[in-house]
Image 1 (cartoon, rainbow, N blue to C red):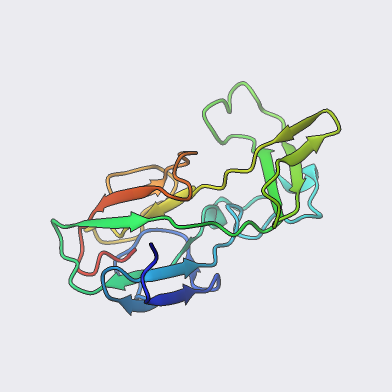
Image 2 (image 1 turned 45 degrees about the vertical axis):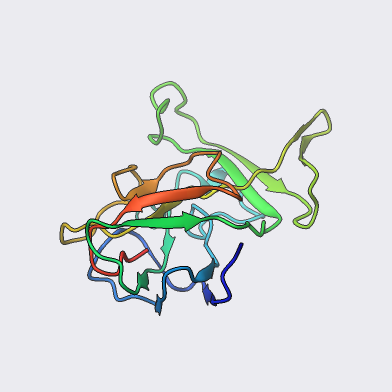
Amino acid sequence: MPSEHRHTIHADHHHFGWDHSIPPVITVAPGATIEFECPDASGGQLSATSSVADVPGLDFARINPVTGPVFIDGAEPGDALKVTIHEFKPSGFGWTANIPGFGLLADQFRDPALYIWSYDKTAKTPAAFSPKGKVPLKPFAGTIGLALAEPGIHSVVPPRRVGGNLDIRDLSAGTVLYLPIEVAGALF
């Protein structure tokens, strides 16, 4: 059940890496409920009007932005942060792409591809992929984590001990995730 302490972190409070020197956007007590407004994985480089011609020009320095960080009062290295995902508020827009040179099968799929998803963001029904197929909507947190103890900026793309680009489809509403804390305040 969500806490009485509600906060919103807006999408303009995003950055492109884990770095414990980034000042926190907000400080909250343990158990606080926070709503994050998150940019899409392209960092706004792709939109509902994008075409496959936009894919090769993606700036990888702007991929997978993370919103925050949030300082958790009393969180100390050696503790674990318990994150309960209560809900997602879909935008009505999404994209699927094959980005040349990126991903596990980059050597086998070299050409760019892009599919723009448009769906009723209030519906609980599947999104139409084509007249012949629909895909169930099950939003999940692709990138989530904490700051690392090591100084400097660290990519959010690889999954690591404190989180990262996890892309676990079951990291959806109702999930509880535990992350090991490496810096004071966790910097979620």
